[in-house]
Image 1 (cartoon, rainbow, N blue to C red):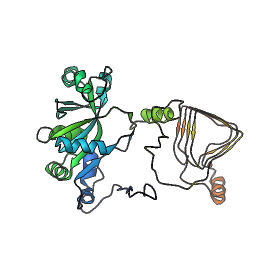
Image 2: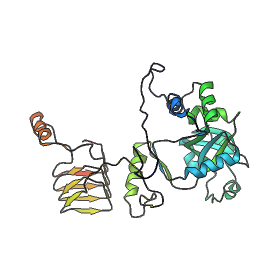
Image 3: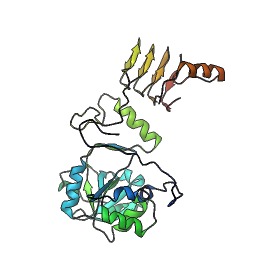
Image 4: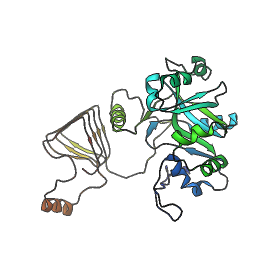
Length: 312
């Protein structure tokens, strides 16, 4: 789908498929790119930007590309300063004075290894970043590759993951640099982090601003009507389009698209993912026949600290 009616930006989903060349599903981040290289090997493409789909942040990729070109890098890894306690579940890298990556460990556990990866405060200061007690640099899983290098790297090995396999290997023989980033960044690849990041968006002062007019959020337009809210008390919450909510009390929660919430319902500290469709009258009659509930939250429900999946 297109970003909007005025720009050339668009998103094309390349879903995992089985082909004559490969009967396997994606085995990791690098394997997913490898299986789709034919889409990247097009005229006038010099660089490939590889992103993770389970992160929340706002970054100007043009700045990353400028640094990539200026440094003469073949690969650039976006990285964020972190504290020692965060090292155990992230890929930690070490750079020299020019920003070239000279060492990389995925989720290090050995304290001596972590010590060896620590950076002096001056490494952050010279890039205009205040260390604030952070001594380590973590990979964000965001990469820029020269297209020719990407092809060579993925053909030289059958390894399947960039962070665990590819990056630690190529720093020994390629010009791999780090781009220092110091904005909000959250990995939402676990249920806990997904839950906490979403509820933070509904807080009074969220860490991530959904309403920045200089950096709008693009998504597939759904053309849904505004939500209908009757006789409800809703505080510190986000309610998406197309919802029908009657006589409910909602606090510190996120209510997804097309959510149907029944009377005398209380929802607190929860994420309601919503629905992909509205049920028709014939659907509802079939529900009665099968003795199954309708999609949505029924009357007199009490939901606290939960994630309710889509179409429930």
